[in-house]
Image (tube, rainbow, N blue to C red; front, top):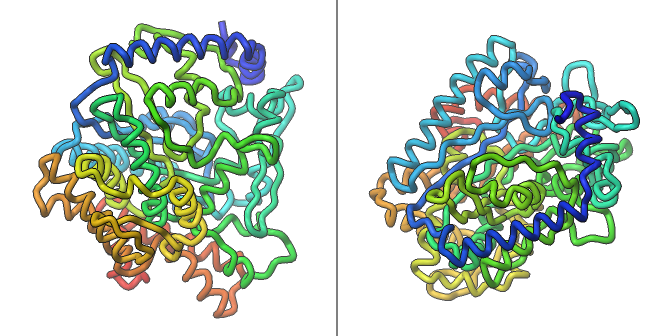
Length: 512
């Protein structure tokens, strides 16, 4: 029986034979492919889902706070990598007007209750891409790198007690594959664990593919829209100030900042510095749904955790599901379902950071789902955009947000770098997809409005923060003080609008 002691549970994980685990994964992959041939994963009811990550701060000072485990259990949120993290997963809903409203209502209901409970502890849950103010009396560098050794097991002091997270720092294979570092312009921080990944938070919408055999086409479209949607959603232009090199000045940091540092954090913490293509990356197109299964099965094994089974249908391939947990791609296929009748193949979209408000997050969910619905049906020509261009769009968006040199193919087959034409086409098709699912024009426009406002103003949450820091530095503030003031402004604005408005209202309300 597994021990409740963390070090013992890590040792149990490290004792799993990698070769035996991988053989079981391959056997599970064969089971999935047989079920695919039988049509088990064909599920024509359109379903959407949502994962939403937060971090906790002191409600008065905005300094990072550790979330009591009892509070997480009480509010029904899940633990994530860091002790400051909390994650909500919505109940999957049919993709129609009622289902999207249900997704938003569930997030609002649960988050409002969670904020009330957190307030009693003097804390607040923040929706953001990256935190920048460490806990009071601590440095961010210390918080991210503190660890102890327990009977030869390296344990991160501020990491949740998930054995898998800690095992990554102790497994020979994991140590060889994970960089466990931050590597960004003017940031170079090494750690003994993967704890630096806890800097970042995200939203992750899911879209269920009606016929599993068509997954490669949907997946290819998802890769083509990844760059443009990332450009709209960037929200992490700065690290905590003490993470930057000592000899770099504020102007240089501002000039070289990436709008989506969250992407680089995930890649450099979990990817080896040399010798591999990386566990976290922009994935290639797939030619068949079976190839999707094989790619997951043959991915580098980080930590072959012990596998437990229950009566769920997808426990027929429990080792494969465990392997999928470390199949880190910015867009990835998922095969699962608790029962045979609910079994499905879906696409999980992972590039988008946590957003200023719930309405902004749901806008990305609706736009992603709308595009997945419309683009294949109208046979949109962006499918012909070369994969390497889609990848360059993605990493350009990471660096420059809406200022990136993005290439798109419009519905009339024309290549364009014009931002207005790109988003006019993309968001029009998102609305078309929403209307295909029964939403009227006004309902569809409500979901796209927050993102249209960003295009119109050429303003993302990352640019909003960047402009505030730049203005404060120009006025004589130190870089550290400017970042902290911008972060407090962000949390203050979110306090008023998280549940009731969108980032577009920030821009209209004089906060720009």
